Amino acid sequence: MPDIPSTLAECAVAVLSTSDARAKTSLSRAVTAAFRASQAAGAPMPVGHAAPPMRPARPARPELLDPRDVPRRKPGSPEGRIALLHAIAHIELNAVDLHWDIIARFSDTPMPAGFAADWVKAADEESKHFNLMCDCLEAMGSHYGALPAHAGMWRAAEDTAEDLMGRLAVVPMVLEARGLDVTPGMIEVFRKAKDQRAVDALEVIYAEEVAHVAYGSKWFHFLCGRHDLDPKDVFHDLVQRYFHGPLKPPFNDEKRAEAGLPPDFYWPLAVSG
Image 1 (cartoon, helix red, strand yellow):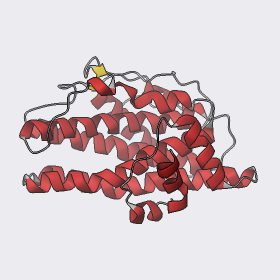
Image 2 (cartoon, one colour):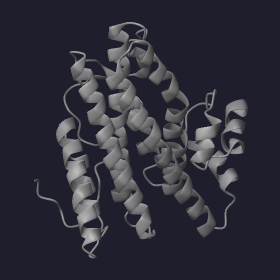
Image 3 (cartoon, helix red, strand yellow):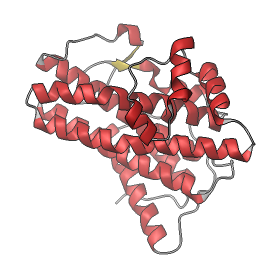
Image 4 (cartoon, helix red, strand yellow):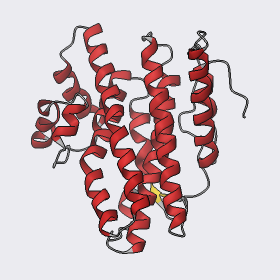
């Protein structure tokens, strides 16, 4: 069992500062267990304050490339399916860091206790998702780091490093909501290939990501209420400021609604972007 810092913000920085991907997710899950144990004992771990790094520590591999330079492979082949799993693993690892980063980076913003608890739960689930994808890759004779990956995944975090409402709008309510749109198609790719391990893993991810989008929507609306702002107008302004390009349909309207995202939040950004 690793040494766990005494505050949640310090724990977040410890996860962000861990470069090995499996070690990062292991520490993330250990912190979550310690956090839950402190809650159960009636003495919840304090959030505290800590200064996170602008960029999280990462392993030497995968090589990070401009999105235009990442090779595209057709998912109908085993190589294409490995590339798809690798891309998902990379997204999940970034999500682990994003959820810990929001706890540490905005620890000076007064928020209800449930805010940190939600992102701890999300980070724990993203850690599980990363490990599920790694297990699938290893079952196919590959591993995380074997292929190049998208270098732009942390851009949203850097762009919104001083804007909590912007972070909530862009990360859970745009980027993670996009996962709800595309995951059913990915599940179908592996179902056709009769890869039940990958199907099962992706179904876990699909089911749990709805809550992560919902956390974003919940706390975004909370902050809008605190400042007496119209959530839809603010969302449109922030996405146009921080997200580069229009939102791309088709949208999974049903799952987005389940997560607290009504169509009039995102459709105008698709048609007018």
